[in-house]
Image (cartoon, rainbow over all chains, first blue to last red; front, side):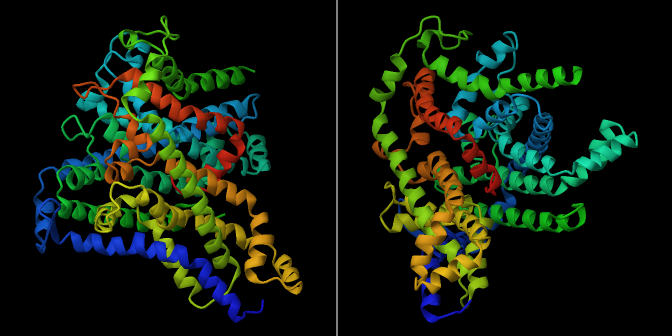
Length: 289
Length: 272
């Protein structure tokens, strides 16, 4: 195609809003967050003082930080395992060409479109000690959101049921892409269903497993509303994940400098995970589509 | 046959945690406060009182309008910004194309939670805290629209070049080719972008509670948790009524247009 000047001008005009927005609302703040992490900003007194590495020393010595990182890791790992296995189970069930598949697909996907806070409020209501869940369980049960052992599990389950439909649909598409003659051949050779699943299905959908795990892990690091509404990080700090801790420090305790430092930490974790996962992609995935 | 029965049994059982919450939300919102924790699959003394309280305890109608207009403006703005940028990156060759595309893509890598502190300070300095501007400008131009631009680019790349060549022969300029040829063909991609952009804005929670402090400027997710009694305890039936009003319209649209929703959210979305 011929490249002329007016074409080029159009291109620059077309990308200008998105480019300027990315610079102004993503890259500049990213640089600023590092800069702020070297400062203490007092909104009320309107002072903004350079403190050097003070916030990072505070980070290294923060007695709450190991618990926060532990809760973040626990949430992410629990979420990914539960989300991917449930999504795969639902997709396998729906892939059998039963009648009513469309209906079940709508049901399992529907929480995705329900407003997150509305969804969380309903679960918070059901998970009260005298709430609907314990009534379903026969009247007695733990105080789900107020006990150390169950709060994290509850938050994970609420999040899995909310979003598992997305991964289910991706898995369903992947399963439908597995060539039928492979199954036929395996069956003729006398392979058992479990063998077929682990030796044929799983390897062939491994790109999708990787994709969904990346989406789910990165998404899990951003969990906020569920924690804010369900547990406020408690009991103790057992469900205080990094983003919630960042919000508390910056916007509840007005420690903006320390909040910025925690933002830098969050960014580094996301960056490291992304790099690791793209490296894994080369080794682990059986084939690339 | 037996396998089929087991599959159906399992599917129906698994439906419970997906269907029960919505059912429980609506039915409990119709219970009087005294019965709120009673286990009644249908309220024994149904009352619309909580649905009325929603509007007397907070300016809920106003908050509803806030969420709706913000989501609409953000959706329209994102469609314009992302289709233009996506088109240019896909179909026009210009100097710096690849590096500039990489600059834009950084928006996909950096979670918005990382930049919330500096964004707050920037909007504070501009005097725009406690206005809707941060909830409108950042999604349209910042990180959320980058995903949209990426999707639009992936779509425009697949368009056959002959169409544009023919239009060019007829003397159409770039902007006209974009508007009259490329955009009409991009309807499925635009639909997908519209669906996830609208829901993203409608569900936003961290940004509203950081930026907005006046009740009449609240958005819905922010307002929902504020129906509390004098001791900050939740007024459950009122919260559930407000939650129902927030969730049900979207659910109805979803059931009608489920195919577009599922395609829009799952197959094009990169975020969970």
